[in-house]
Image (cartoon, rainbow, N blue to C red):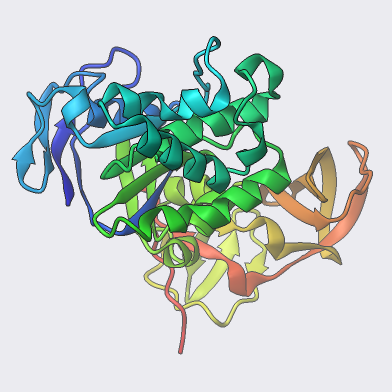
Length: 350
């Protein structure tokens, strides 16, 4: 079991602040956050590359503060791959084992097993310079896997790979724990979809803090705060000003929200969260396009509405020029309500 207690770092730009979390054996934890949230700093601190200002890291009850990197039972895969250019692929992967004095036959056998896992079995005699960038990243991934470390730290390891290969490797990651029931995988990403798909548990980071931890589906449906809702939603959830008055919900332009599935609290200002898929073309709400951008097979449309700015997700590749006007409808049952301070106050009837 890996435990962080009030972990705080002195990093001048991306300090971690008071992290308290426990990672249980046999699980994959996805750590989601925007660039600069502190994800890489967390992994570097765990493995011993960056110092601790306050708090502690314990592995099975042992404080790792004075434990050298090589003795921490951890391996790390970086987004920017590092390979040894003078060694072929097989020797690159076997290198950490040979360094630990593992006999050559066993080291090469384990290296071939790791290369098979990442789909590079037929490339073992090539040099890194003969590989594509994605293939070189997979070599670096195999070199970390081959160590059979208790803790595998993965810092956006698939960011440089094509979509099809990323999907394939995501499916393989649970196999890394099959032979190591005490193993723990910490996987950082900026992509909510990847975090939701891959992890047994999801950790959301923001500005050096852990702002949420739990089941990925539950966190998506019930984010504890606006910042979590915006990080976990892709495209981000839109936030508009509103008000509860006499048992009814209104946007800040005075328009009533026809919503019966929400249990409204006391009168007062609220912040209304609108998911991108809650808006659809065709309806009575006037909308004007301010920007349209493509994301995979979808189109993200930024709209100006009577009550604020919002983002709409449209299936397929569609052309929407800035300034175009049309009507939209709002699936109000999907709305989220937040307090002025940003906490989730959504309550459903029934």
